[in-house]
Length: 363
Image (cartoon, rainbow, N blue to C red):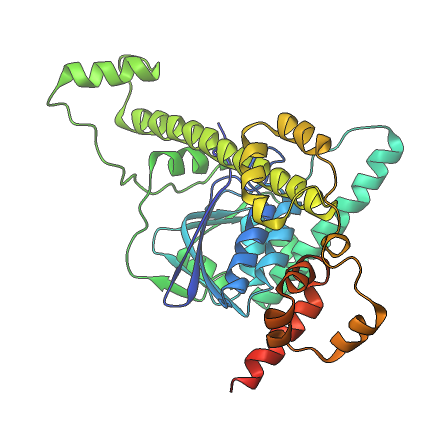
């Protein structure tokens, strides 16, 4: 069972921290769009460097390519490989040379592949796409390894080409080997097995204690495993259960974020349509998050607010208006504060200019 792509982010000492794990890319799961949003956040905070931890058996070649594009918006990206970097994941490594890995990290390159179906025209189109991708991967591996494209073709021509950390360093996928082992979990072993890794490191997953056989039996029964399940099978099932729970949490968080964006857009349109003022925005956003359709119906029923200028001094003469041309913020506040209040809503640019001039005069 695939463990779907996950990404976590934080900052430390002004450097962004990204963790990319498991299967890369799925339209219904987190993908390169998540990377884009996190990079946006880094850049908005003035963070232009990132340390990226990757532990993945690969996935969508198109998503991997877009992840590369998003990460290249940063000035510097340093990659650390966990237990595994295989397939499309190694294309990311090739885009950011100078990375590092643990002594027991495993690597695999092979020709990229895509799913395809359809009539002969579609198949011909997809064939051209995969030929382009294969050429891109071949060139990338040739560039980092110093080998010719013909040598790369020979290396992967027989199928999956596996490397340990020393071999990956010699190949150019990484530049440094960390002098300790990466933690190998049950799910890492499951992914390596599924990928056909010929040399699977020993698991460092914690053992399930046998002190209380009743607890162990209850855990096995709850997970739906056979009574003679091994520790690794139990840990793998627990990891899968946690992943499912994480997926539910992620979907809920995304739904909440989408609801907030939708509610804010509704409120902003209503303000533009003069349904209510900006001071009431948060109230209507909260209502729309709770019940969008009801909030929209209520907002649509609101009459448009009359222009304040039509109600404030409606009989102001042309001469009076001409006299106000040179008014400062002090003049408005002393002589006609209501007109200034109207300006904040109807002509915020002019109001801001008056404020800027006022504060400039204070220095």
